[in-house]
Image 1: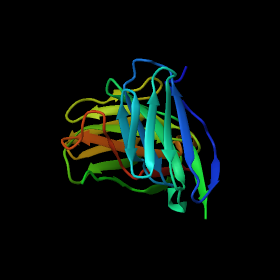
Image 2: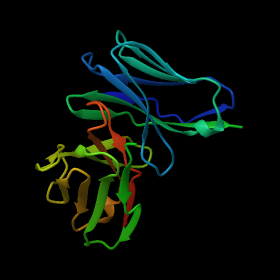
Image 3: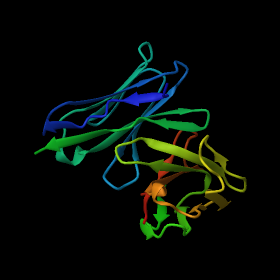
Image 4: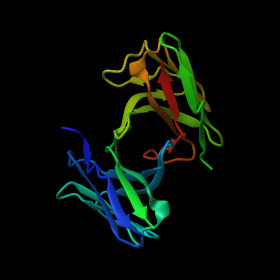
Length: 109
Length: 117
């Protein structure tokens, strides 16, 4: 079983929509969860990270962790065409990072 | 701050040749560097972890004699793909963690696209 699984998408939404991106993970002991954004042919950049459970908000982005169901989510409010990218969830555990396969998001103007 | 560069950004080579990819931390000291490989529409696959001055730790299934990693200084790590073959064609990305980051944080380079003919 992979450490983290991610909905592959692609996801296409109109500008202004609320976007929900999701991942599930396998080990209930995982504590550190991250979301990265990757533009085409570029390296990933860290968007947000959360520790343990709960929500974290940064502008239009909200990261949510539900440890009871081992589910992590990233919500994007008022999505913009510039948000079009691949979003990767990731988990950090014992000096290793485990990445989901990424969800490609396209926000149409 | 926390900028990581990679060179070259793109390389095309003939089968059987060796290719060296450099990863540099420009404004911080990278005590740990990670090397990943990414296939189209696939996740980042960790190849190895290198700590400055130590031998790299390779993930299961990654041939250390084929993918030579050197982390000789706090700002530079290199990945050499030896005797490259078409199946080695991929997007290689490095990341670094160091003095400016918490232990669960890493900064990625822009990646190197390798095409082996």
